[in-house]
Image (cartoon, rainbow, N blue to C red):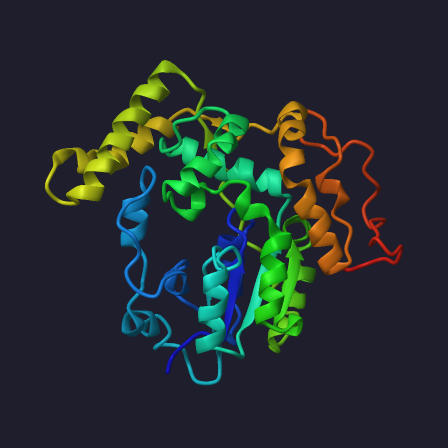
Length: 330
């Protein structure tokens, strides 16, 4: 069998694409050419429909075993094989499927401030013209309804950041020694140190990887009348694509429409403190659960920010401590 030895398992919008590219440069690691195959998300074909654009996403799933194994067939002898599907952390059924097929698998998990993660996720879909709600707080209020309607995981803005629930289940399925937890900001601020920790965790030579490729910052189109009109046209084209992928000329216009949406758009706008304050109560219980599970302090995710995203009253770098008062590397 040519199956992976390790996974970048989460979380979406937490630097997993850049991390995948960085690890691919290590001579003892082989990363799949398809960054996000999603094989372990289903036992067979994925559902055909859901929210805007979901039909196209589902068509990208690599769910046939033989096609999935071909992703790793060209790996040289003696190297470790890996892939990156950041929804594996979120999906409990994926935990069980990976364990059943690859019980020795090692999992890399990157945790990002769940509200920042949700905002980046929302901005991604808003920029693509797929998100019809022009405010992150209002979009999060739609989450339960969208989940009930079968919208794909990428629409689960707050749920994807409930890491406490996810890790609690993951640790029931995999021994903690097979999981490494990283912080997104450390991956960005101290890439060489974090990459060495990952390499040591995987058992390959350290000191080789020093950089994580710079991530593209998602554009943030203003909610103008033009944006609304282009977005409606794009969502209509995606709906047609879901039903008849090759039978309607609108399908061929979705790419140009998305490029028009992002033309001259602003960089991603930071969350305001008012938006954070509205969302914090929705994730606070899970942050506390995460602290209990890991023994680490994630209180910075709950503290006030200014309107540039800066943490109010932040400690100087290197002074963050765990809840038990001892310095932690995590």
